[in-house]
Length: 395
Ligand SMILES: NC(=O)c1ccc[n+]([C@@H]2O[C@H](COP(=O)([O-])OP(=O)(O)OC[C@H]3O[C@@H](n4cnc5c(N)ncnc54)[C@H](O)[C@@H]3O)[C@@H](O)[C@H]2O)c1
Image 1 (cartoon, rainbow, N blue to C red):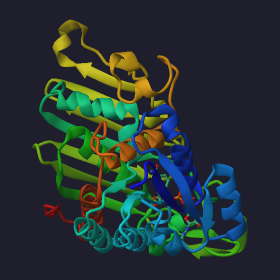
Image 2 (image 1 turned 120 degrees about the horizontal axis):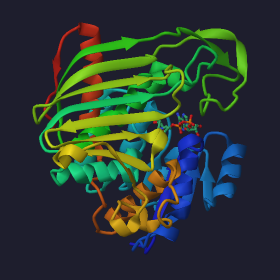
Image 3 (image 1 turned 135 degrees about the vertical axis):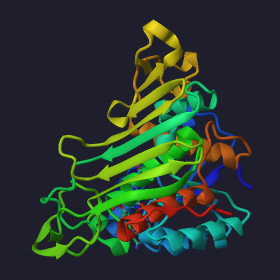
């Protein structure tokens, strides 16, 4: 085994950039026994991939992802491609004896997600899923406070993920094609908040009911040169004709938690006024927690034992000296962190696990992410059948 972790990155756009930034910077901020080596990146367009490799410092580049995955020098395959290719790429990587870090949602379908979890279980390699919001310090602190019993028995979890980029002027990106994405706001955004509620509460979702799945905008401008369309808002030229969106714009549902509480979830791409409002509120017998990614350096906490002085307090979670998760690796107090730091924090934990250590907070592997997929799947079943759907325990 080499002293570094040789990485193959698949995908060169939004997540390609976020992951490259993480691999490039992680060992500048964290002490790692097996730091990353940016060995090879695979993209589809030869000129763009070469330019990307040079810009971000990848040693080699490829237009055939299968060659990157089977490269004997690669230890870890990092998947940042659309949902419908995660399964094929992850299973090929596991079969080639590689560790795999895959973007969320695990897949575009429950069947493929199950096959991925089965392939991981059959392999002696490690798997990781980029539910990066777990490693936003405020979310990691919320997880820790619940584990310490600070809010007691959980009654309610209320989570929403509100974006607004999916209005009628947004063209037919792959995110609006169910054959590629699997679903719309649901798999894109509900996936994150289902994972967040599971992570923070430490409980599983046992039943989904009352789900609504809705598409507001059925026709969208097609994109010149095909259905690619990388990052929303990237200014892709439209082709002048219209095509059909085959995904939801919003999905909302209710659920029951394994500890007896109830939870609600709402994901939308048309919540005018919000841009990346990934939020949750958790109410327990002893206290409550509130988080909004649009104010990601803060966690609100209510301690009911404060009696007459009880009230929501806003914790600035940037204080490494006070033990705030991940904060000590970064800047002095109140020098805030951003979106990209969650990926660097996760890259640090992935490399720590591969080096034989423990992640700072629990890391989702394919088996764990399959639980989130089962909730996503149950919500769609509930919406279409109009009935409560119990969630199968994951073996
Ligand atoms: N964790 C997060 O916060 C977060 C945020 C955005 C996206 N994502 C997830 O990351 C994944 C990628 O999303 P994105 O926003 O980076 O998409 P993107 O469209 O910006 O980039 C996708 C990349 O995959 C490549 N690609 C597309 N189809 C391919 C194929 N068949 N074979 C090989 N390469 C292919 C594209 O060329 C491009 O480089 C998705 O699963 C998405 O849900 C996660």
